Every structure is written in C-alpha cells, then in structure tokens.
Image (cartoon, rainbow, N blue to C red; front, top):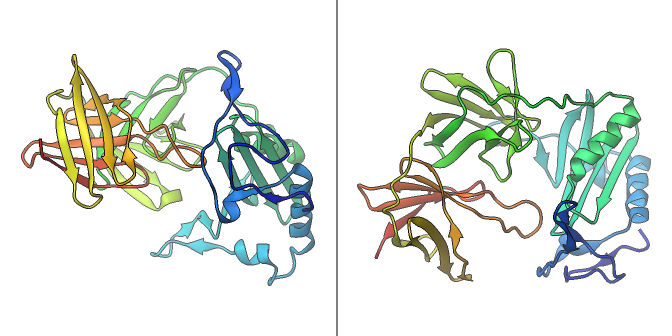
Length: 331
C-alpha cells in the first residue's frame, strides 16, 4: 500500500482529491469536514492500495494466524447469539455466500469492501460522493456471481399497520411510513430501513429487521442487534405545551425547548458547547422526535426520541446509540 498516508485532517486529502455532497437535482458542492482523526480512522488510501490489501488477504487466506483470518472469526453476543459484527468486520451471507466486509465514510465520501474467501472474490467501492457504497458493492458482487439483482420498480402500498409506535424497553420511537418512491420504511435506528412486505403480513428489511403485526402492536426482531421487542401503537397528536428547560444529571447537560408560534424547537447545551435549535417532529401523544443530522463519520445516530412523562415532569431522551436519558424540568 505504497500511497497510503495518515490524513488526520479531514478538510482535504494531501493529494487534493475532493469529496462532494448534493444530488443531480440540487447540484453538487464540496463537502466540508472539520474532524481531526487519530489512529486508523485517519488513514487515506487509493484504489491501488486497497487492491494490494485485498491481494494480501487472499494470499494469506489459509493461514489461521494471519491478521485478517484472526479478525474474521465468528463472534457472538454475551448470551451466545451470533453477532454480525466484531473486531472491525461484518460477517454476512450475500446471495448464499459467506462474506466479510466493512464500510466507511466521511461527509462527501463513501467506501465499502467485501471478501469471499471460498470464491476468492474481493469487491472494493470508493466514492467521492454520498451514493450508497454498500449497494454498489452488492451490485458488483451480483455481477461477478452471475446473480440477477434486479428489483421490481412498482411501489408497494404501505402496510395497514403503518403509523407511530413506542418501544418501552428502549424508550425509542418507531415510525412506519413510506419512502418518497413509495416503498415502506421503518425509522427506528440510525437510518431509515426499506421494508419488503411478506405474504404472511409481516415485513422484512435487507438488514434483517422483521416486523410482525400482533393484536396489540408490532413485534420487532432485530437479530443484527440481538434485540427482540414489542412496539406499542401511539396514534394521535402530542400536546405542544412542553416548552421549558430540562436538565440531565448523568450528562450534566440541558435541553431547551422553545414554542415559536406553535412550532416547537429544541437545542442541547453542556460541556460540549451550545447546539443549534432544530424543529421537533410530532410523533404521537407525548412523543416527539428531535432531528440529529450530524455525525462524525458515517450516518447520524438517528433522531432523538423525546418521551414526555407528565407525572414526573421528565422527558426521557434516547437515540440508537444512547438510550433512556432522563431530563428533569428545571424551568
């Protein structure tokens, strides 16, 4: 990997290459990163470097003591259930073949690489824009395996059980609606998941999430996170009378909610500084979402769920990466 370098300052790579954000409809502009990385996250590499790395992986595939072989051993959760990710690598089955992989991204950049040890196939995708690199890698892998990956273009109708839900185990909201193109989507984790309706009335996402309607809500299985929970419906409109200031002792942080002519805005403040005001999205009775569009490297951690408890004058906040944080009203 002769041209790999430590490029800790993400504002620009040393060779002048540029990452972009935007779309064909809105136009493209240079993406500005302001993160200073340390360690492996600060490495910059060319496609030739990545090809050299994949060749090394393939050349040492039969050596159990080789670094990649040691990193790609199966891993489990604490209860023994298989885990799809460990030691920096994802393990999955794609088109019936065992694959180890990893993706990465910064604002303006996307990458994904895969290795199939039995078939001795490597796929590397590197983009200087925000297209889904994993989907591109899967398309290339399908072509290499002579697999038809075409998908029907007709949009699916939303499931009859679409709507707003609350997960009491994590205090996170779950919203089922449709993508602009018409495909059902689930908003629960750090990014929206496309759903495919099944003949039995359930729905499955490509990541493994399964939603199963029940008499009193939805069963949600997320084996990729070892999470199996029950979602309770929360239909209706939340009352916008929660403006004020709230404090979290655990984080030594404040949440300020402001009513601006009937529209609620929220911002955080604490030892990391003052956040910007963002518009809250109503979900259901005493349930709101506060957008979190920012992330250090790849996708944001997901919207913050604000679950209001009027008896204790507390708002419980949570997102995919941080859950059940109590904010007590102080003003």
